[in-house]
Image 1 (cartoon, rainbow, N blue to C red):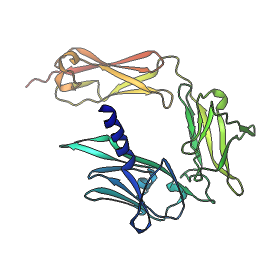
Image 2: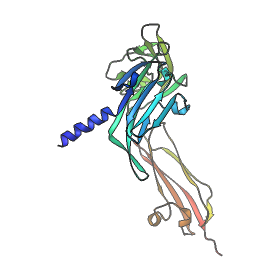
Image 3: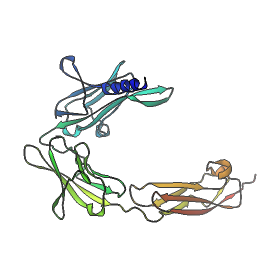
Image 4: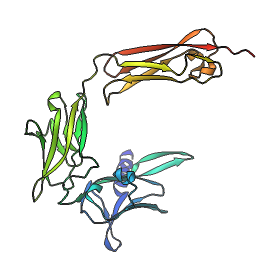
Length: 305
């Protein structure tokens, strides 16, 4: 019985998203779909409370070509006059709500990746001409030169020394929906690179990407702590700030110690009733390195009527 329920849930997930065709016909969507740029598309997602996900720039620039309407039994997404920049994932899911709390119904979802092909724009356009990609040795790095034509031949090139970087399918992989994926980045990958695409015509070059190698911290982070005032009355508000200098895209864990913490559990200066010299302590730690502690003296002054 449980196996039957699992199969039914899978079928629901596959059938929730459809494309509206000519003359009122509907088509279930596969994992990918290719359409010529300039076409308009209408998608429908079954359900009375549906949430959509689509390329974020459509929201960033408040594009009027995109419209979403929730009806009684389904939600409708229409994208008019598509462009190569609209290439990306379009997905929807049903929201289950109880009062003000809502959650995603994992059994009622739908997703497709749409390529809006344009022979003049083989790469998905970006708002900048240069991007920085951080290479971290403990996780894959993505060089996001996505294409609008899935059949395009794409290669990765280093600017200096001028050479093609081999795509071996293991350490360096190309995914048309993501770009080039470096599975195990090393310092040898750092430098400036670009992508080249060919599809029934002259090759096209992507923007340039500056690959910066990030060393995993071997020691504790550099932390400083500051307070808006070293002395305050019991009813005064005090701001204590702990700042860490470290590598980009590296997680930092913070923890605090302060007077009255064991009793109150919340760091509110007005709750600390002591005229003795006290201190706040900030402790921070990189995921792969040691812990650094910093503290700052602070004194509350009792206020007598």
